[in-house]
Image 1 (cartoon, one colour):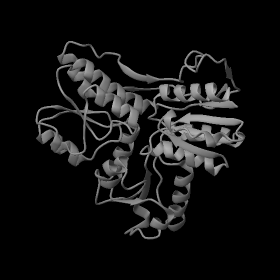
Image 2 (image 1 turned 180 degrees about the horizontal axis):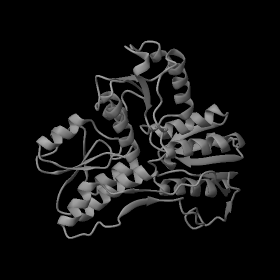
Image 3 (image 1 turned 45 degrees about the vertical axis):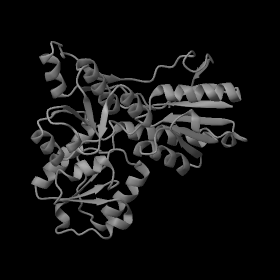
Length: 345
């Protein structure tokens, strides 16, 4: 068996930033409880590891005792949530991915200009809930081409569409085409809303999956971008399975399989990928080939509230940024097996 370990995969800069925020707060405030509104990112292992360190995850702001530290997750929140946090005198640290914040700002701007907004995404996803909260009277969520046929629009010339950042580019294209067909004058966002990391991970799977017999995606089932990776693989004719970790592997999946594409959603830790690869090496005498499709080198600044807290505690935040590059590839990490570096796409 040959494992094609594709890059980019795993943590994006936004997820890395959100996780690092909680890590830094745990170090900075060892004697204070740290609360997080919703899961910090959509990954079971990340959340469970933080719970093991004492972090408390809540679904309602009212669950947080007044005056405590509260982190907003990477998916963003509505103005109403921010207002409640302020009323409860909470120290709110905003770990919203800056690319999600970009969509929030677009929604605010277009609503102020009098536009109606069609928000392409999953209505119950936390990111969409937060974005919709910025301009609830102006936004209609569309989840499918069928939804487009039923939206109510006052003035087609004052209409814009925005998208959830973690959508399948294939699915989004179909819905956007339906919007443009019904409303030819609809305005597009100034730049693509689906984030670079989502696009890059999907593009890598789209490029490599046709060569493979099976795609394994490491990621949790509530991770939108992880689920989209399995869909992209199947769209190009390669069976795909989404797994939280190696314990979910089914040996029957590998009957007749010679090439396995291994990737990970944007919120899946690299050690889970390594554990999966080691099992495939040990059980199937697999060889490893790393294939680079797109290079990522992105960094985000840490949130302003965290900077202020650091200064108050005598820690200099100057120059601290959240920086992420290609996952480090070493033979030791992947079971001591030599790693072949494939041709960059």
